[in-house]
Length: 79
Image (cartoon, rainbow, N blue to C red; front, side, top):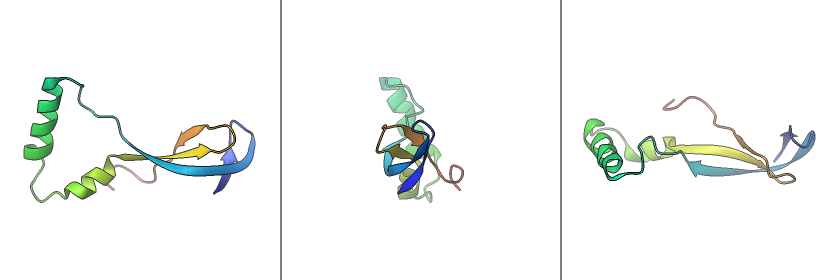
Protein backbone atom coordinates (compact mmCIF):
# COMPACT_ATOMS: atom_id res chain seq x y z
CA UNK A 1 0.00 0.00 0.00
CA UNK A 2 1.20 3.48 -0.74
CA UNK A 3 1.05 6.20 1.92
CA UNK A 4 2.74 9.46 2.75
CA UNK A 5 5.82 9.05 4.98
CA UNK A 6 6.62 12.09 7.12
CA UNK A 7 10.26 11.01 7.51
CA UNK A 8 10.88 10.48 3.79
CA UNK A 9 8.69 13.46 2.82
CA UNK A 10 7.00 11.62 -0.05
CA UNK A 11 4.59 8.83 -0.88
CA UNK A 12 6.26 5.45 -0.42
CA UNK A 13 5.31 1.79 -0.16
CA UNK A 14 4.28 0.66 3.32
CA UNK A 15 3.50 -2.70 4.85
CA UNK A 16 1.18 -3.52 7.73
CA UNK A 17 2.36 -5.37 10.82
CA UNK A 18 0.55 -6.43 13.99
CA UNK A 19 2.12 -6.71 17.46
CA UNK A 20 0.76 -7.54 20.89
CA UNK A 21 0.26 -4.57 23.18
CA UNK A 22 2.60 -4.32 26.13
CA UNK A 23 1.26 -5.97 29.24
CA UNK A 24 -0.27 -3.73 31.88
CA UNK A 25 1.19 -5.99 34.55
CA UNK A 26 4.81 -5.98 35.70
CA UNK A 27 7.00 -8.94 34.75
CA UNK A 28 7.15 -10.49 38.23
CA UNK A 29 5.53 -13.50 39.85
CA UNK A 30 2.96 -11.27 41.59
CA UNK A 31 2.28 -9.44 38.32
CA UNK A 32 1.57 -12.79 36.67
CA UNK A 33 -0.75 -13.82 39.50
CA UNK A 34 -2.65 -10.50 39.29
CA UNK A 35 -2.99 -10.90 35.53
CA UNK A 36 -4.29 -14.46 35.91
CA UNK A 37 -6.86 -13.53 38.57
CA UNK A 38 -8.11 -10.41 36.79
CA UNK A 39 -8.19 -11.92 33.30
CA UNK A 40 -9.77 -15.25 34.32
CA UNK A 41 -12.06 -14.51 37.25
CA UNK A 42 -12.97 -10.83 37.32
CA UNK A 43 -13.85 -10.61 33.63
CA UNK A 44 -17.37 -12.06 33.18
CA UNK A 45 -17.59 -15.59 31.81
CA UNK A 46 -19.58 -14.51 28.77
CA UNK A 47 -16.70 -12.34 27.56
CA UNK A 48 -15.29 -13.78 24.38
CA UNK A 49 -11.58 -14.43 24.98
CA UNK A 50 -10.89 -14.48 21.23
CA UNK A 51 -12.29 -10.94 20.98
CA UNK A 52 -10.14 -9.88 23.93
CA UNK A 53 -7.08 -11.35 22.22
CA UNK A 54 -7.84 -9.30 19.09
CA UNK A 55 -8.24 -6.15 21.20
CA UNK A 56 -4.76 -6.74 22.64
CA UNK A 57 -3.15 -6.15 19.24
CA UNK A 58 -1.67 -2.94 17.82
CA UNK A 59 -1.57 -2.26 14.07
CA UNK A 60 1.57 -0.59 12.71
CA UNK A 61 2.35 0.77 9.25
CA UNK A 62 6.06 0.42 8.33
CA UNK A 63 7.70 2.44 5.54
CA UNK A 64 9.56 0.18 3.11
CA UNK A 65 12.14 2.89 2.33
CA UNK A 66 13.22 4.26 5.72
CA UNK A 67 11.66 1.70 8.11
CA UNK A 68 9.68 4.24 10.17
CA UNK A 69 7.01 2.44 12.20
CA UNK A 70 3.74 4.33 12.83
CA UNK A 71 0.92 3.19 15.12
CA UNK A 72 -2.24 3.07 13.00
CA UNK A 73 -5.02 1.61 15.15
CA UNK A 74 -8.51 2.29 13.86
CA UNK A 75 -11.27 3.10 16.36
CA UNK A 76 -11.20 3.03 20.13
CA UNK A 77 -10.38 0.11 22.42
CA UNK A 78 -13.26 -2.41 22.72
CA UNK A 79 -15.24 -0.56 20.06
